Image (cartoon, rainbow, N blue to C red):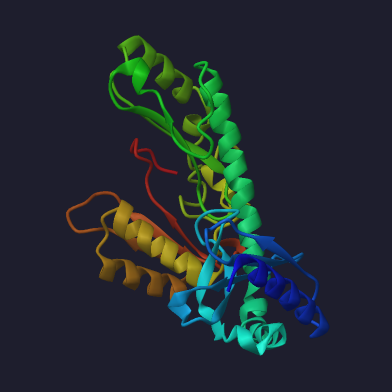
Length: 301
């Protein structure tokens, strides 16, 4: 099949898809050195059509899905593909696309994937803008959504990178700088030390793992509203804190949680340690577990 014949076939497939009540499609030719094109629909649905010897002379129609990792990119889905003899005509290809791709689950899952792709594109743009601002400080061109290398200034590994904490989360910057003169490093650390990021710490009024309604000014947990709430989630959060941050044995942590659930509160006094932790259930009717521990400076609360 020559390029002209393939182009006419693609146009015929789009017309047949419309006739089959599959919406309006547009052909996007691809310069791949072989018959290949994409069919696009306004809602983000995409089909990839190609004709090659690998398919035994047949036309292959494949679903295209937004990339899981990179915004703006689509990839061929292994799950939704069909080979059709072009001699059967555009109608047969359109029917195969409707039956084995569009109505076989592809369109059901597409809206969420498109929404996630839009979010990823927005995050990539935000990171690129921050990196452009950082590069501008040094008279450099922005690296786009990529780390900014500062090796030329230090002679050692030095770069800045922006990531998003999680899907839909805020952007945060990471710096890896080697070979700085001490006065520059101290100036950077001074800016960090004077920031709200360092000045704020858990208020400890109701323990370091308290629900957000108990937070006070200067408490890092005021920004933790995105955490999963409820009994089970708070139980796991407190258990993890006791085991990982306070060195409590997993079995002791579980026993304390069970006792707190039954009696309202339980004190943990690890063997060989003076510091105690108090696990509380449903403080002020919050419906969650909380845990109180001494401050690191040794003061009570």
